[in-house]
Length: 144
Image (cartoon, rainbow, N blue to C red; front, side, top):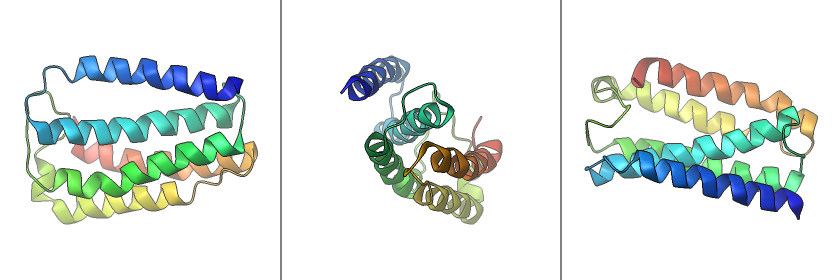
């Protein structure tokens, strides 16, 4: 129960901060895209904290965070299909001129999230590296 309360407290704090960061975003498509990416990041952070011992490990809570991250990862290509832009976005316009590569990298991130093993803390720790590499591969080219 303490673990769930900690996750909820972190989620509320993070979502509150994200809402403030998005106040200047005018385009609803960009806002939805940012919220999807933030959901993925928030849940991957929770998993990372459990894997490294900064939070108590709970297989159930880890599975819940993985499911939320996976739902967000699956939504990435659809969130970027409209060429929505806003001065507050971190997305670079090159996404739409190199769509096939972007979509391939988004798919690699989704597959890496699918392979996260939430059975034990050690398995979680072992499986998160691929997610970090997949996210980094995309952000290096397509995020400012």
